[in-house]
Image 1 (cartoon, rainbow, N blue to C red):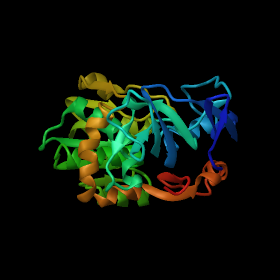
Image 2 (cartoon, rainbow, N blue to C red):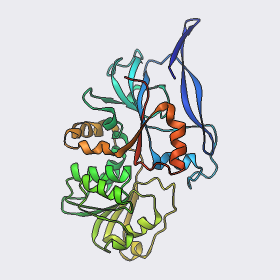
Image 3 (cartoon, rainbow, N blue to C red):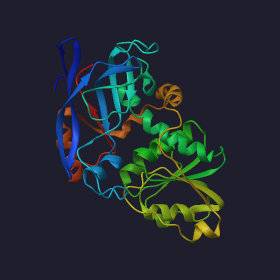
Image 4 (cartoon, helix red, strand yellow):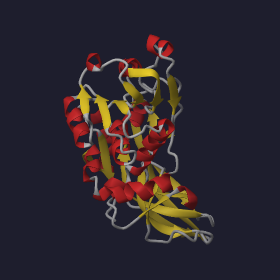
Length: 324
């Protein structure tokens, strides 16, 4: 699916394809025309992207409890890595040929504001770079709690968000004890690779009133209930999951122990976070294990169907576009 550029009466336009959700479990590549960029914008050709399963599958299956009346057509995805093809006259910190992270999703190319992208150094592979977005989202939630080195922390869920939260707690905050509740055995094994002190396969195994802080990354009501019961008096929890799967309810532990719960959305500062995250690749090559499946962009529609039918169950899917 090549990008084509045309010239018509002095106005440069570009035709490219975007993957659009047109109904429940209905995806279609749609042609879009992008006109000449403005002075504060850049044109990016996509090199790689990702399927964020926890966020995208509920939209695909119309099971998102926070979106009961979805409107179509709608765009898909939000994690994009690409090469800058052209810059506006007012852009001074980015040049053609640079690699950047952006947030436009499953598209061959896009025009975006230059101040909204994250510049990626040449020595950072795109599979690591693509995880900066969710790592920053996880970091924001952790920083709201600010656990100290000796505090005890419980993370519920060892999906992509849970693992990146675990990574931030161990590598950035230097918390010594971080335990994980995750029913999937293979994911518990990955959590140990990321530095988990102990993992639990069942909520009944989680001890009560032990942890100073908890981070909810599972989108599971049962896990959330276990997390609340695991916290000490006046313990604090942050909800990092999207809340698009189960509805959460407060239990007796919340009131009896006077717990505090905060929510968190988006990242604290994607550019600032990348300064740490990109350097950390040297010490944490295991982070890219999160990408358990890789496809070509041409296979995106088929991959969504396979994910929905549970034929494949990866943590996260890496999507490759044209060669860089």
